[in-house]
Length: 230
Image 1: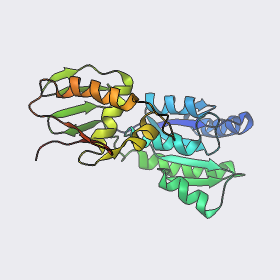
Image 2: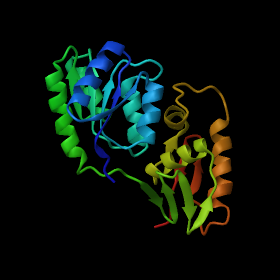
Image 3: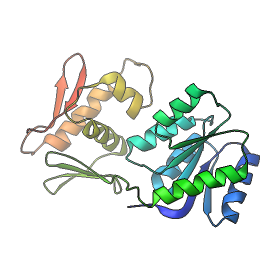
């Protein structure tokens, strides 16, 4: 389903810049929501459907690039304009590879920002948001955050759902523990914890218990693989 074509999320920690951007977009007919840090931006981006998001690169709490990565990992494909004082080629390439759709270097003219948002909003009408993930007889609804196997509803905690969704997105691949720690728990080091094993154990009982075949497999010394039979 496409987002509201006149609803824009602006994630910007500088109050003056946020006010100017919001004023420019509002005067051009957009409804604007503001987020002042990465945590708030991520929550808003996950909870509402937007035509476009503008995301500052250097945000408090979670940087803009990571906000985009996490939204893309959740299946949220809202067209995104990265706004940043970092304008080198490598900076722009990194932003676009993380899932950004356009890149605008500060300082910028409001007229140019508006033109770029307009362009992305037109695209937004044709972009569909991924709402369902499937692997074998397992189905995950990303909107309601629910899981089921052959109609049997599986009750999952938020982190269990996030872990399962990540494994389903990488179905058939061996996912190392380090990758799960980074993308599900936002840990960029191994804290010598068995948290992943605990959560995978819970998922096995909930997802594979009573299932026609096991989906979750351990690859000893490496990580885990969610695999459905051919």
